[in-house]
Image (cartoon, rainbow, N blue to C red):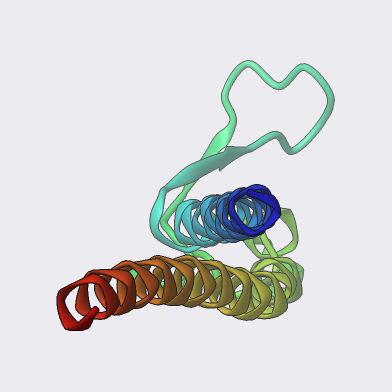
Length: 133
C-alpha cells in the first residue's frame, strides 16, 4: 500500500512540474507577442506633451519610407519612441524562459509517463505470476 501512495505523490509532483513548464511557456508566448507588437504595429509619437496632432509612425520592422529609422537628425521623432534594444531585450528574455519551460514540461511529462508504464508493468507481472502459480 505504501508504494501506491508514493507513486501517487510521484505523479502529483510530475504533474506539478509539467504545469510549471506550461506556465513558463505561456509566459514566453506573452513575451513573443509583446515583441511582435513592438515590431509589427504602427504607433503615434507626441512631439510635445498633450500634442493634439501626434506624428504617425510605421512599424519598426515593416517600414516602407524609413519613418521608424531616420532619427531626430532628420526631424523624425519615431526612432526614439520604439527603439530596437527594447524589442530585442524582450525577445532575449523570452529565450531562457522558454528553454526552462520546455525542460520542465518535458521532464514532467516523461516522469508521469514512465510512472504509468511502471505501474502497468507491475500489474502485468502480477497477472503473469498468478497464471504460472
